[in-house]
Figure (cartoon, rainbow, N blue to C red):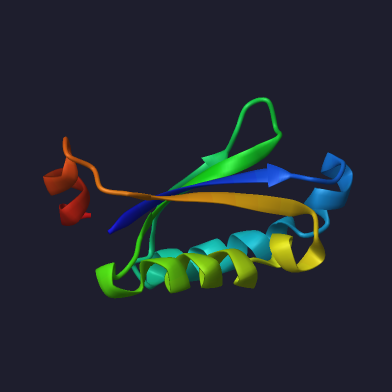
Length: 97
């Protein structure tokens, strides 16, 4: 199963940036594990977006863990909105990543 996550900053950008390196290290670890396919900041700089791949049998638990373990969430500077996503067009391309 795939998921789309929107990460919205809940504190001023200068407070968010204090935690940016820990957040990026966390995302790099998710990428190395094959969970994160792509991520990046939104423009204007109000948050970011993630494309995720999680096990079908553990979708909700996996997505909760991804949100809860993010240093942004732990520091209270950002909030996640996550939707499980079952792409119908382009899924083969995603599966090859």
